[in-house]
Every structure is written in C-alpha cells, then in structure tokens.
Length: 126
Image (spheres, rainbow, N blue to C red):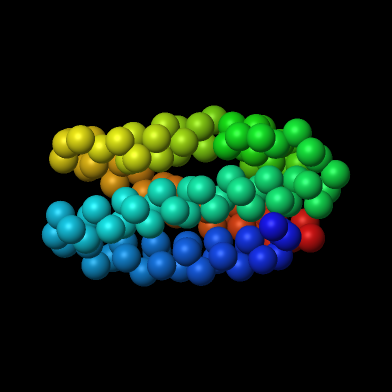
C-alpha cells in the first residue's frame, strides 16, 4: 500500500481512538478503546513500513524492525517505548482478565502522545 493512503487510514483510526478516551466510563467502552488501540498500533507500524520503503529502506518485516528503522530515519528518539506498546498490544490480543485489560488501558494516554509526535515527524519529513 502507498504511504499516503496508509497515513490517511492511520489519521482516521487515531482520531477515533482519541475521541473514545474521554468518554470511557463502562467496561464495554474500555474494551472498545483497547480494540481501537490495537488497530491504531497495527496501522502505526505498517505506516512506518510504507514510509521506510518510500525512503528506500526495505528491511522492515515486523513491528520491531519498523520502530528501529524509524529511529534510524529520525522519526523516533528511541524505539524502546514502542517496544512497550508492542507488548501491550500483544497482551491486548490475548486478554483473559480485567486486570490485564486495565493495565493495557492505562498505557493508552502515553501511546496517544507518542503517536501524535510520530505523526508530526512523519509529516515534516515528506
């Protein structure tokens, strides 16, 4: 997929995640926000893959690769934070209890800030 198309999908999904967070009051709403987090996370790393390919980098095959290459390209200061988000996304996919869901949910505000910064960097480099 072309970077521009994927970036627009990311913007749309990200807007829906940001819109959901302030209104979360019930377990169902929290579960919905976690699902939106998962979706945005997937779009982030795939958008980074497309961005890297446009810059001639063809060495992105996984989320960790995407975050390492993004750091190489100056989009991220340190990919370590994104590895923590990857761990949260992996936990979210296999949630079996409320405690795990609450832990994943607690990381979403930090994730939102990180995505905003990343998207700003991507916009400034193309």
